Image (cartoon, rainbow, N blue to C red):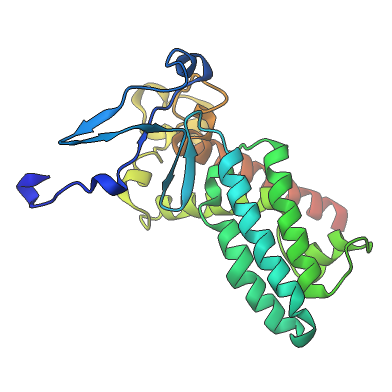
Length: 244
């Protein structure tokens, strides 16, 4: 850094030790500190990187709680002034203050447990109540969200974001560090004879931990793209058979 005339700001420097529960237990709840000149950086259990809270065990609970708390706070503010807003203005404010925060970096929720996506879905349902003016216990919320507001549920929004990233990677519209993980199976020498090579599938990186590794972009991206294409083909075939 000194060669580039840069200096590390110790006041904004955070230290996080990550790993599995077993490896973290060996640290006795706290890992070694980091010495930077006269300053000592002590380890933290959670750090914020570009607005995303990363925990030492790569769990999503802390980040989801923070996103939901911010969303609920904004919804309460909008609820107080809802009578002064028409539907279009209410929808604009909801998208600007709530949906944008919930959709920010939501690709990290890929393969997330249902209890995680359910918390985010509750915030989305609350936003739908604000826009439509429905009461909390009124029926027809699902029909309103899907058919009238045309909002995707949280798991589908995550799949959409991941699919959009994969589309950009395959059309050279994404950063190189993402495109490097989009390697067709047909380009792998020892896998060119496989059926997946002729079906234009992407190579999925071999992974060990099902709790963490499957959420990596190199795994979830190629594998999720294949699942999404299969799902779309089935829907098209089902629609065609129903029409005939």
